[in-house]
Length: 136
Image (cartoon, rainbow, N blue to C red; front, top):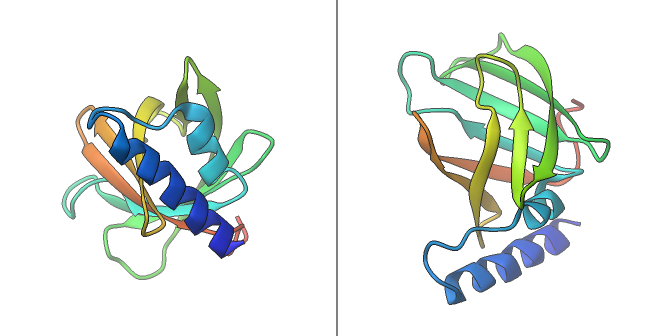
């Protein structure tokens, strides 16, 4: 499965690079990458209101996640949310204090996905893992 995921991301990245620089992945292609898998990332650079997070994107449209203060051991807090594809973009709803909305994404060959130009945040890079290794 890991090989399939990396190959899919590589193919999508190649398509993105060969097109214009401002062309982003369509929402259904982002869904092909993340649904049934887990992403890990950081909301902002270390500092105030910055958290590490891990999220599992279930095929039924639900998101199960956990977060903790930047670079701290333990003390994860669980949360839930939902994902959807709308107007050609991949959209997330994770509650009032987290990033919500429909965003642009870019894929890279190193099993990463980047949410681009999020208001107040900038770019957020996610590492992608096969399945649900955290049991979310």
